Length: 184
Image (cartoon, rainbow, N blue to C red; front, side, top):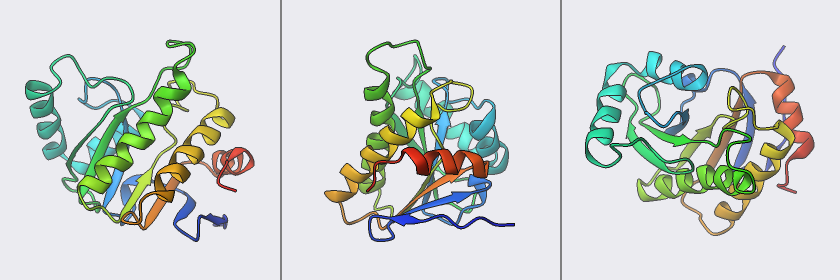
């Protein structure tokens, strides 16, 4: 059974469940690790589905602009390779407990910098996973509040990005997000 979730901000924000790699949007966001060389979870799925072109571009970014890895909160963009999406925006979320007092700021930066790149590349639709809430251990209720506030603040000042999808792998994660979101 497919669950129906409410939309927010005049239908510009949609909550969905499933595999983010299958979404027909201009860009999907990758919850990457700092190496940009693939990993587990969303990162691994994007690299597997997107194919070798994404990895090749990530290696080029490492060689030219981020030889020590992508800093937490920053974002870079590659093509989508074999994905339906034209682009992949790679961002590194904070590992919970590693930056006490700065974690919320770093997580918010992931969303803000990804959306800023979206605006720069004339992206009209973008799909986000739940950044840092998997292996990086960020508490889902806190992450929901931070993500929704960051997206709301950005969209209130930007009309180019017409649709933001928040894609959760499990319906229970979407329900937690809905309980703690700050769109309203």
